[in-house]
Length: 395
Image (cartoon, rainbow, N blue to C red; front, side, top):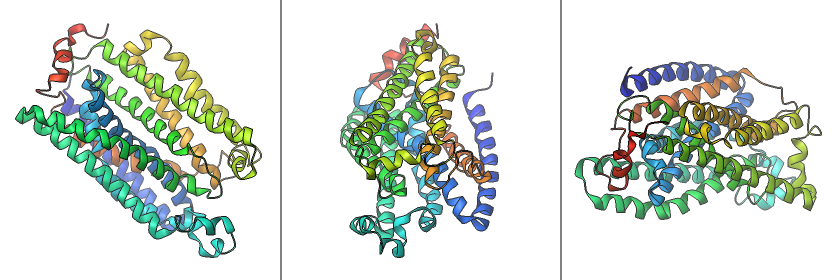
């Protein structure tokens, strides 16, 4: 069986090829149909950004709690957290598409809208771009510093580096929560600037965590069959990852339903309009998509992960994780597309082109970063006992 580096190299090359093709098609769309390109690109960017942001957040959480589940996925989390320089570059098309996406960027519209005038101090192009730069740069720095110290600890065996990472991770998590919440408001909620929800950012952040645990479970399942993880990873570690996916699935459902039930019970026009737009009153088939989201993102994963063996078996857990990632894509479509489209079936080829383009480049960079460092953390006293006891296998 081929080793990890060879496998990652093959995936990297394939992802890069598809990514370049997707970006080339997207560039054509940018020139010929900028409005449609902007909608499709934002949807794709936010989906893949969730994996980068989720990697950083979970990496800092892992260093705080020292859970054994982190032993398997620490290096993939570090690779994901180090993709933020790429996300800065990939944000450029959004910066050039503000007028195509955001109603508040049109001064003639703002001049005749009292609500937008009240929000203009915050929702304007200059502050939007400044905040975006701050968000992405802060995340890039956090990911780079934590990964650098972790890599240095592999060679220096300096126990103080572990403490330094933990000390940075504590305020880092608070910064992550704040920035991610405001980022969701800026880039997604402000697509419909008359509407607001106080927990929109939290729902977005929990969704990031769920997507990242699913992605990392897939990576861990593949790594467990090859050296150096073959014979080291245990069924219990996959059980832990499965439990975390299960917990985040329930948390996402709770937060999403809480947002809905609070707005439904308040029954205020400025709040209900967002949900009305995602029902059949807002256009064709959007209510059906809502039902699909409930089934795909909650009911089916919930039922599958009730069974212990599904979480302890890497192959089964991998399939559940794939399902969850598909569900996350459906939710992002439901969050963003109704702003611009009457029917849920109004797919455009740019939806696929931008998704493959952004995703292919992100995966290529991710696997390039992942294969550059040892996959097993060295000299870390927190994980030595798990590595030593790893011959339990997958049973």
